[in-house]
Image: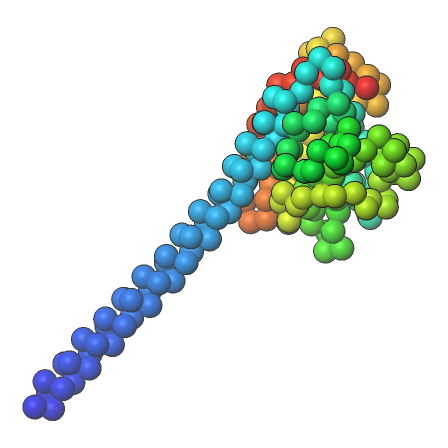
Length: 195
């Protein structure tokens, strides 16, 4: 009788261990799927934004040092109302959509989209985008790296900025979300004029 009870207790303990391990594994798989969906959702959102540009659109890039070795970057889509469209009220005159990568206090970055009128954009550019009160949407809350490169069609090389305007229709993004084993890289095509 005691032997039967001991075997029964061992079986119950083993069953609970298996259930506990399965639950933990399911939580890890779910977290990995969420991270993957966030990364690829970001890439798809950027692809749609670049594809929404027209010959009347403009693309401008700013970068400002923030902290020891990090920079805030601002990729501005001008006259491209469908870029990062989230269904804002049409009464709000969005003329510039700004994809920002901003340094957080802990050294990580966040990717955020700001929606601006012409006046808001001009004021933000004068202030080096330090005081932004425009409506925004967070795309990636915490990432290690997000770098932009622009293909210079004259020199046939990738450039890290557009300080000197040059014709380009390809933009490369390299980003490393928190915890990724290696940075993700993709290239987008656009029709916008670069300023």
